[in-house]
Length: 183
Image (cartoon, rainbow, N blue to C red; front, top):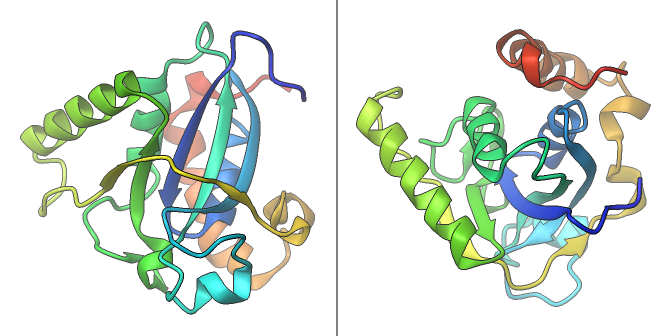
């Protein structure tokens, strides 16, 4: 789908990008989701390099959305509900800096919204530990290799998809029924 003129972009890292991509593909108002790498120092990183943890990059997704149908804050609310923002450099079985929780903001407005929401969520004590989600300006986003895109859609039978992604999707669908696309 080609983004419209009024579209905005959010860049988020919440562990394996296959999970986050699968979830946001189902969100009403989301036009496109692209898996990739950001937040590191290596130019044009590849999956093998990122997996070593030496590039500084996180597995992330860029979400193109229509702000008249879903707000940036709602995107972040979904993001915080589908991963554990209190674990440093880890999501479930995935460990390393490439799996950190991070929001890479595109402008000062996004930074303000993210900062306010993090303060709000920490104040609500939804988790036993405080949120450790990194908040950083987006520098460069590198699109992941083609085989990573729509991974869950193309490989639902794969073990990781069955044991990690499917349960996350089920939990998301139950909690966010009103925000699901009507196919």
